[in-house]
Image 1 (cartoon, rainbow, N blue to C red):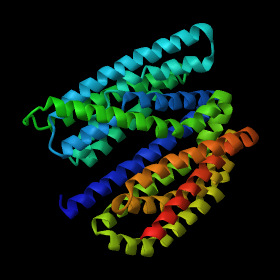
Image 2: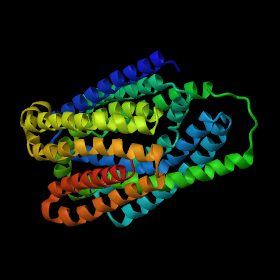
Image 3: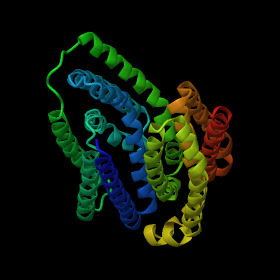
Length: 400
């Protein structure tokens, strides 16, 4: 891929990402102004449940599909795809049966919301097209499908809500739009695969098992990433609504900054270790200062934009905005240091840090949450970010 084409891909990806973020925030604004705060909390809990249910769609197979196609083994897709999907369906029926049995003995509203999320599992198990598109370097196509998904999901959701005045119909829209996007994505991505090549069954089985192992590893990280919202949602719907709005904009800003940073990091990594160190020395402090400015803007204006975008009901979210914004410079700097470690040094150390920071988060959560409620949960996430930054920074300066 030429440098010009590479830059064009990145530019279009950034444009699509910005549109996606604006649509997401706009839709959240619509919901917060049209739902009572408890119903918005219920909506957020179902979204959290869907994220947790997604763990059981065996996403580790996506990495195997991506790796195999990059290495020219396009033929492995059908074997891994269908074998994995059969496993997902078995898991779906098992989880649905367990939830049904629990409902017989324990009638609870949150359990009913979980049933809605479980219905998405067979759909999420089909979502493999991005692995092919990334392997075939069709980055813009991924962004187009993502934007199509969020745009039509929002449009149909608003239409259904206006006609029914029931937020649950939003998930009807989500299901069918996602189904349509998956069908289009799979049909297009499969057409890119090379039908030639020898189908080595033993190799395919080995790769399939590796995919299952990677899926097990993702249970830990992904599960913990939803733990804060799960705990709050199980306690109180209103608290979850306030927390969700508090983290919405800081997380979106952080993700966009991290995406731009990853583009720089990839270019630094290709230039070699010495060049990477020089670039860190040159740009790390500037990036940290820029992120501090972002913190000040996000935090100091939160009391203005929160009531305007989301309504005055969510003014309690302002403190959450402050806490999550503070984590941004630590997350960005940690990404720079840990990428150096992965590129040029010890990947096993990176894995240990990944597990370690989640343990620190769990310990902080168990200590702070009982005393400070959602503020304690937010501070636990901040402590995790500072720990991750500190450990990676120490390793980098020790071994660079």
